[in-house]
Amino acid sequence: MKEKIIVENGAPPGGPYSPAIRANGLLFISGQIPLNPETGKLVTDSIQNEVRQTLENIKVVVESAGSTMDNALKCTVYLRNFQDFQSMNEVYATYFPGDIPPTRTTVEVSSLAKGVNVEIDMIALG
Image 1: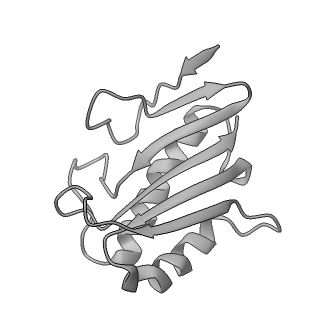
Image 2: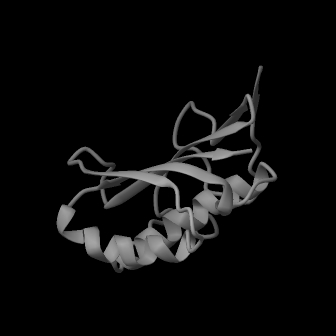
């Protein structure tokens, strides 16, 4: 059985998909981008702030499901430019400071939405 997670104060989905689905004790969180839910605008001033906003958006979704970032199992990070890897990694590490950070795949993609330099999705316990 699957359950759609309702997110009250997060960035709204940009299409016909759920922000997250819970199934068999797992949360599957859709890709999040650096969209500020309060202003409806993309954060674009630095890759660090873009990653921070993206992870804050994920955190809102995870917490809306009653879970925490500590329960993250797997993240996929999509970067428009792989030269941003180190800057992304510095911010990313602050969201997963425990002894067992989630597994992660990071890939460079050119097909992110216009103005978006990072997108992150996640699987977590939930």
